[in-house]
Image (cartoon, rainbow, N blue to C red; front, side):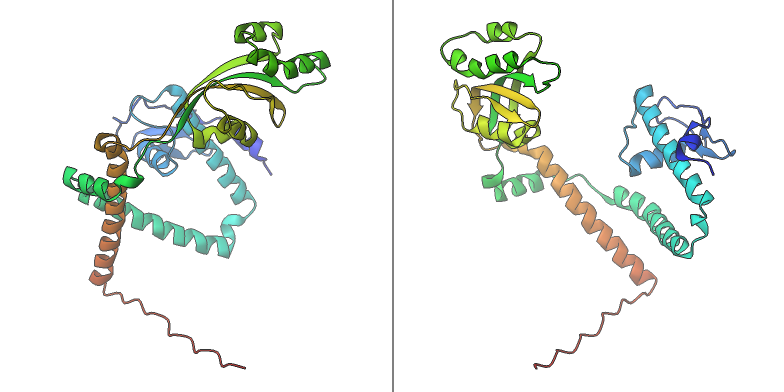
Length: 291
């Protein structure tokens, strides 16, 4: 039985397209068992997986997409070798998924064809209804000194001197001098305007340390997992109301998604009516008797 790694190592002939201007039936992949993948199939896979594939995609982007397809192919082949394609429960699930896919192939073009861009009047009306909630996020601008915790590689004296830096920086030590003193162990970074609600990506303790500072303040040593930080808050930009122009992209996307859901529901209802399908509601359950 071939392993996943062995399956992935088998050659896949890739004829990578440069852009979307390809015949739908153009072969872009030829698999080891002789099967092929057409441009239309590759394009559909990219849309369904939100893969990086668009006009002007770099060869690396397309190669990543091909690698995703190759991985899917390898796992499907492994499932076949294990006999999963003969398992009745799996077959039943695949039949339902195939029906759903067929329905989507009918619905998606109809929905996209029936959608119209939200009008400027609708966008303006939505803006007025939610004006009080439409605002920019608070942002901060920060400078940081960073030291990794690697006791096997970095001497204890480096950490001791790093711990002394906050007081020395507050007394006027230049940040460039502080970096030079502990080079190459200490890195100096400047974090441009960042949403304060997104600073958690640097760690909760660092986020809390930054939020406790006023512009110009220097923190004590902050630790996040195996990294130490000393941060200086350069500026804080408070939130402010968005203008209509600034809010328009967000409102446009919101209205379009609402229109898409509404149109999908309408088309589904029309199809059920056309097919004379009646969905019966389950009978209400009898209330339980009190003991």
